[in-house]
Image 1 (cartoon, helix red, strand yellow):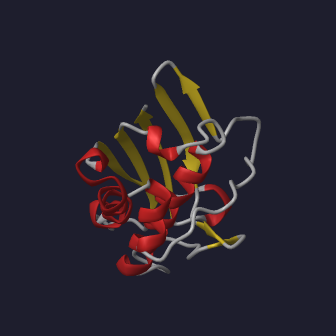
Image 2: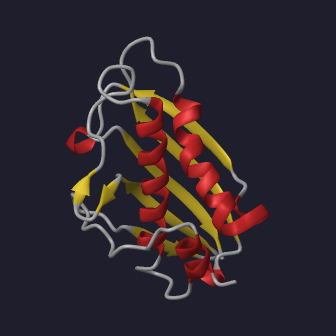
Length: 151
């Protein structure tokens, strides 16, 4: 099954890429790797669950936001690669979680992205990763995700 069909099978649709918030590219192809810039959880043009984990946002909401960041990463990849089926594997993801002091469940939040990639790519979606708590993210986002994919 094609990657975009797998995404539809889990009731999601790859959106149009979000315009960068600064002077950078959404994704960059270098050799056989694609580097995806930080993606926020925009869904239908709206930032999903703004705020901080441990204060404004539940673990379930943060998980959902990370999942949407992963979906938006595929949209960013499409800016440099027309066929997502050329992706050989998801190599590494970095997840940033806007966290209130004392919140330590960042790995649970970033599992939203990790599990999304496994659902869509199977074993090729398993990756190395970091899940980092930060005091704030652009636009008040609760999660940001960047990644490296191999083609």
